[in-house]
Length: 259
Figure 1 (cartoon, rainbow, N blue to C red):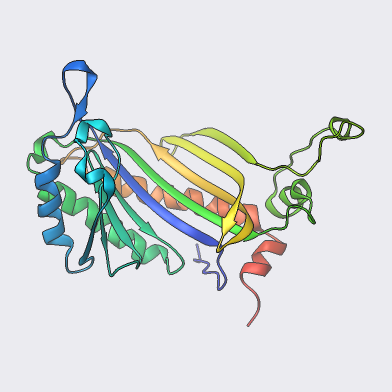
Figure 2: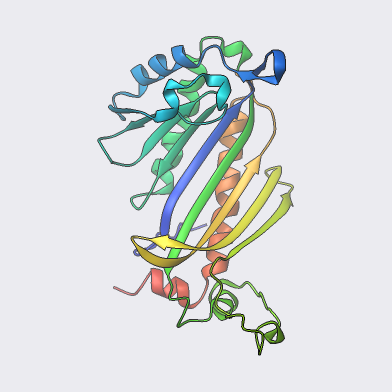
């Protein structure tokens, strides 16, 4: 399949996220006794590509207070993308407008390799949650444009509310908040596909935001980490397919005008 690269892509952020199992302690607390050591080890191996380290406010709190919450960021430079985030039981790769899949995929695979190579007890590292998310947005004037017509005509999604809900009721028909979520089971790669449309912002302007997210919950350890690579490739193929099917037509022309 020929890869399509949009010249004016609507991408806000691309995210690859990986969770591993934490130890359960008395009282149901979830901890990873190796997190603090992992930060230093992983940074030593990432420094060539992500030399700028940010310690987030959560970093000073006990790990058990907020498991699976990022506490450290590693960037190419201050306020630069892409970036890697790390916390107890979680590591992420994030990129934005300069995202290209081939480069993102290489970075994600390297991150997985380094995680297994630097984790203090790799035989106990059991990955049990994977996520690939794409957040896109298009500028949208909710007062002047009909969001339901836009979803129907431009994004292949039909949502209707009865006019009688608004006529002579004193209720304004422009939504202050919009958050539509759908989730569907997926056979290959096994997991869950999530589609979301929401009212939001991009660059300080009002925007219609949509997210395409694939979540996997299989278990991977050092002996089966190639399964993570396979999952990532399949997840991208499916999310990419959904994205281009949704924007087919006017939006595709808008995002990829003729030179």
